[in-house]
Length: 88
Image 1 (cartoon, rainbow, N blue to C red):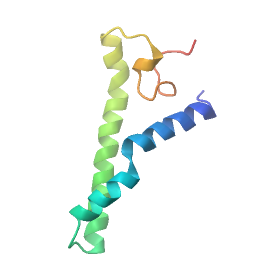
Image 2: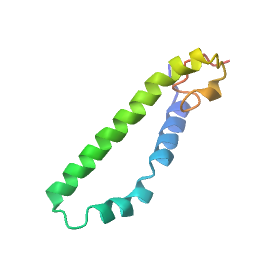
Image 3: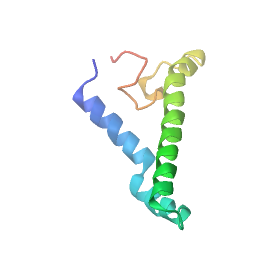
């Protein structure tokens, strides 16, 4: 079972990776001239695509690590909570 510390670590890693405050000016700059409905549509589409990309890499990492014979927990995404390797 995943502990609270592992979940906080994974969430923090995800938040730092996605960087919402850093992407806000980029989003606003790219959606200049769009009405609120179009902006919402662009935001939802971008969020779904980003989620899909992260999910594919998160799901394929354990198989990829096994093929390369990597056995260290640090070789897995998020370091610990998503690790295919048991903690020692």
